[in-house]
Length: 223
Image 1 (tube, one colour):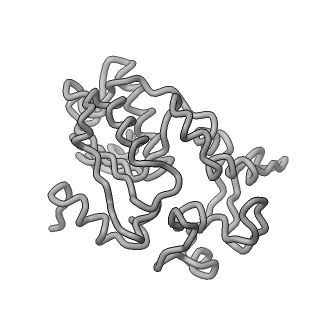
Image 2: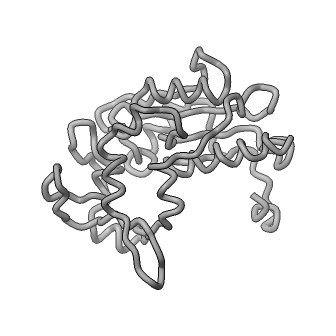
């Protein structure tokens, strides 16, 4: 966040997707623990989390076979140490057969079908989509951090929207509603945005951004 200031930027809205959503939760958790918040410290009015990873205390999330699958892609070298490298080319994965693991994790439906717009290996390479993830970062998906309840309560003055997708196999609507109640104290799930449709997958912001923007409605606007 301090880097934004160095660039002369003061964003009012922050968006985090997947593990990035968990990073924003941990950031707000730390700020609130220190007696401040995203709003007080950085002037952030809105946070939008897209298919956010979930902090600890959700056993059903731990039981998801795709979350466990991440562990099989951890590698170790003397130069880089431990890191996560999810293959984006056809790979034999026990229990799943020969698949495209990177695409499978991010672009498949609950019936394990890839949706239109899924980037194939040449596009992944050309656009630099694939990157190694330090194991200490990726490990937050497996041994997830504790996030204090109520860190997005109204008193902290940053509104929260949690976006979940109908076809995302990594989490359920009920888990996201529970996360929203945990973070805001609002059991009514007023800030949960459910993106419906046969192609509403984990990375819909890449495959069908128009679908996501329609679901967000008045929360977003273009000049």
